[in-house]
Length: 93
Ligand code: SF4
Ligand code: SF4
Image 1 (tube, helix red, strand yellow):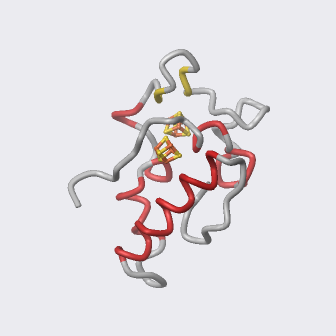
Image 2 (image 1 turned 135 degrees about the horizontal axis):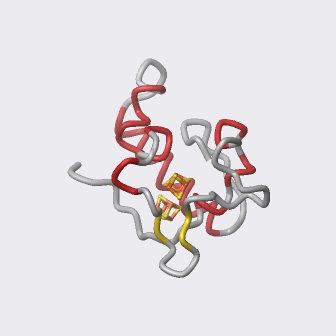
């Protein structure tokens, strides 16, 4: 897989309150302080933290899940986040 098939919907960056690991980025309402609400893109995308990068984030889960399952779980999480929930234990959000 070259790149995670992100649709750039911004749902993950607008739901940081679903996981305490993102408290440092949360501006207080669940939305990331680096999220550009006009473009719906990350304003520091090239240098975003590893926890915001699906491929790099795998390093934290590689002992417990295969890469294929991890990606599948993250894709499921994207769909759930768009609907306001998240049940994937291998996704940070
Ligand atoms: S929720 Fe998924 S598809 Fe939407 S911006 Fe985040 S990673 Fe991309
Ligand atoms: S740093 Fe960027 S990718 Fe990470 S949550 Fe904020 S806006 Fe999203």
